[in-house]
Length: 209
Image (cartoon, rainbow, N blue to C red; front, side):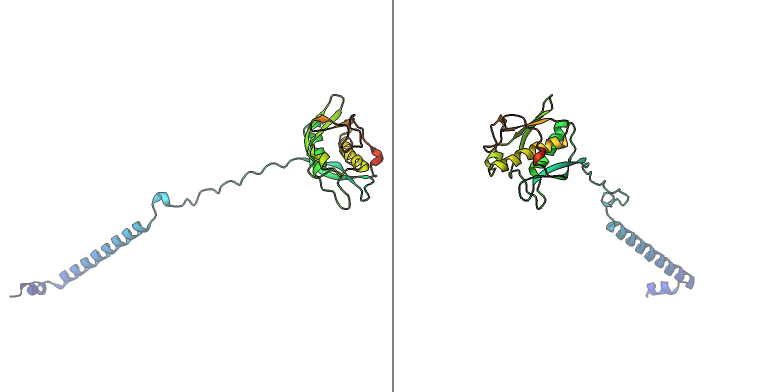
């Protein structure tokens, strides 16, 4: 005798409905459990979640701008007969020695505006500068200024007074400039202009502004 089939046929319709409903609930709960487990497996670990609220990094600090002042530099005229004053900006120095150095370094390295010509040989560099209590300026130049100089008495004169006039025009409290080369007193730069004594500003070589 088939007791299993008999048992199912003996169930009432209400019992069948309850069994069916229970099965649906069990299937739904199983689906919810599997879905939740899938989301849990796909979620990043707490320490790997990007922090959306983190502030942006601060901008890099920029170096403060160096204060600058206007200074008068000198270049030879197109015919090479006059020193022409030309206004340029140079770094502001703290104190008379620092300002003298700033002006002279600008003069030694500045490119001449066309059609003017630089009187300073390429590669000329400043070794040091000193101001005495009598307001005399001692300018010590690298020996390369002698080896690179083209020579000629007037060209030598223009080179020397480019240096002298640049300092004494911009710093009127200074009186004279003594040019040294390689830390030593020298007779001349290129055989003509006497450098054994301090020099005053030569306005006769200067063109009007």
